[in-house]
Amino acid sequence: MDVVTVVVAMVGLVLTGAGAGVFFTFSNSIMPGLDAVRAEQAVAAMNSINVKIINPLFLAAFLGPPVVAALTGVLLLGDADTDAGGAALLFFAAAVVYVLGAIVPTAAVNVPLNNALAAAPVPTGEAEVTRVWTDYSTRWTRWNHWRAVGSLAALVLMGIGLLVWDYAG
Image (cartoon, rainbow, N blue to C red):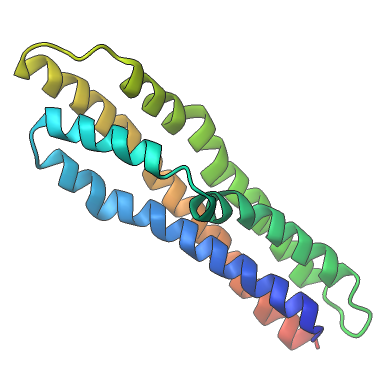
């Protein structure tokens, strides 16, 4: 096994695991926790989270996995010592699955919902705020489940890719 390829693959696994963990945590605890408080508090908290989450560590964990997975696939194809083609395909598949399962839903659904929540005028009346939050939370969480599943599937593909590579060597 080539040390550079192993390091790059491990970085991919760590980044993908971190990103999957964020999505899982939102689905499993953050959104249910926000759903359990007054809607006005949930809206304020979510708007704050959406501002604070845009930071270098999150962006690396969110955008890095498909890049590192594809790079690992390229490195595996260049491995002259083993028949790593099958492992390379698994890493390329992981990159595609992550893009389709995590990045596309984020860009197409979750971020637009976040932007709409932040830009919406503050509703008047408890019933109206509750309706706004419930509509947002239901749709946002449904799509976040997909992001969690997509990123976890990419993580599994990378893990299997490492196993296939190890057995090929």
